[in-house]
Amino acid sequence: MTKETQVMTDELEPQPEPEQSLTPRNENFKWYILHAYSGFERKVKESLESRIQAFGLESKFGRIMIPTEPVTETVNGKKRTIERVFLPGYVLIEMELDNQIWHIIKETPRVTGFLGTGDKPVALSEEEISSLLNRSDEAKEKPRQKIRFEKNESVRITDGPFANFNGIVDEINEDRETLKVMVTIFGRSTPVELEFGKVEKIE
Image (cartoon, rainbow, N blue to C red; front, side, top):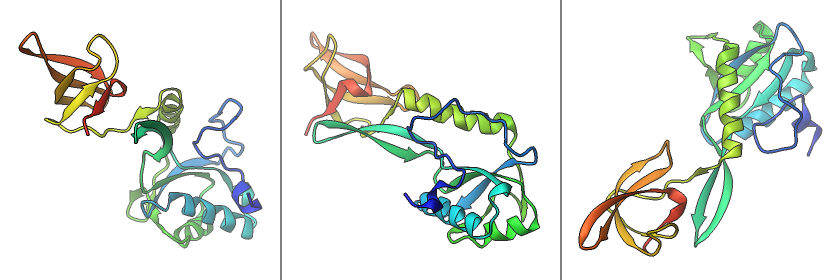
């Protein structure tokens, strides 16, 4: 890791960290959201860190964050957990904004602007930033299952009292990470609610 990637920043990814505090080191710091090219969030973060150091503006900046959450997916029967950006195209930045900083940020490659009205950036409230941080913390404790199911497709139940039964996906609940699967039991089609991790596609 280069010095450029170590400028007072924390990325919302699993790493041993002390308790996260929202109290800024500079009382003038506020949180803003930058628009960036989707898929280039990490490149933008690195570019910002390099420019902050090059201009000697470390005291004007706090943390730069890419909100991510762990997602569990099954590939060839094996589960793996990956980090997914849950706000594609956005980067959170803590800073003391002035005219000079505004221009430096706007001229950073792959940054298209600030979240706000026109050219006037809008700072996040402490409640809004807390909500984003809490979502990431909660996601670390329980990784989301990457959805690979579609309505009316055939699946096999892999765990529980209906293990090895086949069924048809009837409903998908992304928030609860559950499926309603229609299973034929004693000649009757019966709905069974199952967690994503207890069902697999029939290849």
